Image (cartoon, rainbow, N blue to C red; front, top):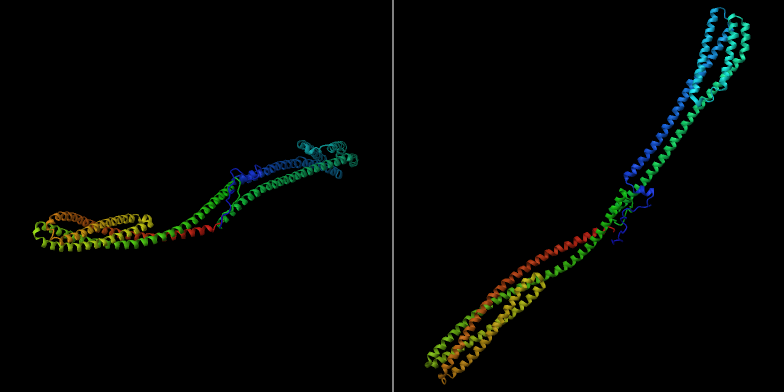
Amino acid sequence: MSPSAPLATAVPPAGSSRGGKSPAALFRNAGIRAKIMSIVTALAVVALVVAIVSIYAMQQIAGDARALTSLQNDVSFNIGAVHQEELKSRMLIGTAAAMPLATDQEVADWQAKMAATDGDLDADAAAYEAGIAELGDITATLGGADWAAFTSAWADWKNERDTAMLPAAASGDHAAFQAAYDAASAHLNDAIDALEAEETLVADASSALSAKAASEATFYTTLAIVVLALGLALVLSIALFAAGTIRKQVRDVHKVAEALAKGDLTVTSGAVTRDELGRMGQALDAATLALRQTMESVAESATQVAGASEELSASNRQVTAGAEEMTAQADKVSGAADEVSRNLGDVSKGSDEMTASIREIAHSASEAARVAAQAATAADAANSQIGRLGVSSQEIGNVVKVITSIADQTNLLALNATIEAARAGEAGRGFAVVAGEVGELARETSRATEDISNRVRAIQADAEGAVAAIEEIGQIVERINEFQSTIASAIEEQTATTNEMGRGVSDAASSSHDIATNISGVAQSASTSAAVLSEMHAAVVELAQLAQRMHDKVETFTY
């Protein structure tokens, strides 16, 4: 799959963030721990505010409860006790009116009870006034005109009771008692009305205080609920914002991971925040970019390796074919070298025979000088020997032609071997050196055989001259001594030449044998090289297959 454009913006610059330095941006860039701690801190602040409001509300409600309790205990109870003592006082008066006191003891008991009732009423009234004073603003409406009217009317009632009704009751004068009671009833009624009005004010104060406590309880409960709701809304907003930020970052990272699992390297998280998830997303984007670049490099390398493997395989096949051809040529050269060696052995034998013939000629020439008298016989013998020399020279010429032909063929084979060695390159360098030496030896053999040919032609010419001289020997026997010196010199020169030719032929035979041995080694090396090249070809094929498989694997990715 062809790669897309490079991911130039895969990793944002360090310190970059969306939204500048706004609170939302700062919160997004904060770490996960900071986000969690901010939520916990917000919860703690909300809990603290709710706790403060609740504590304050409880203190207020507790104060109202204490005030209400004091109002109930110190005010309502005492005014109720005053009312109760007022009723007891009236009941004592009613009892005296209904059942006149007959004895002094009854009068005394009645007066004692009345005095106790008056004492209790005064004590309860004093406690009531003390309770009002203690409660302060709560009882501002109490102890006012109604209470003053009660105390004044009750004092007037007591005065009428003590001055008129008690003496009438003590004397048993019921009519006087009733008249005094009727006269003082207005004061009693005023006192009762004022006391009931004061009790109404006490009940109203108690109700107001209860309503105030209930209102404050409702207010502070509502305030706590509102603060709790606002705090929870704030905490929930922070939590939702944090959860949304974290969820988005996790989803972006998951999107990249899921794309990586599918082999798609083009997807990035786009993370820009500096928190842990943002840095993780940026690191993942950087890793994706590096992996994408690596995949591009691997794909390019796999393509190059595949191409190089194909070229190497073709070159390997060509070199293998050259090595096989070189092996075949080396086998041919080895066979030719063996043939040259055998032919040179035959030439060496012919050279030995020619040397023996020349020694015989020298001996005959010496005998001719010594036995000049027997010139005719010697001439015949010389004619015969020279005839044989002609034949031998002819044979030597034939052998020399064979050697020359072999040397030319050897030189041609050496040239072919040099060309094949050049084709083989480094593997044929040693073979090229040996082929060069063979060519040089062949050229030296050609030069030596050319020299031998020249000398053989000279011998043949001399032999023909000797034949002509022998034919005239009968007429010029006296000139034998002159020719004898010339023949002796020629024979010595021919002997030296023949010996040199024999040594050259022997050396050529030895060199030919060495050439055959070296060519056999070259053939073996070429065969070994062919085997190595075959193994290398198999390795190259395997390398090409591996490169193709690697390329196929890389192609599964999108980058």
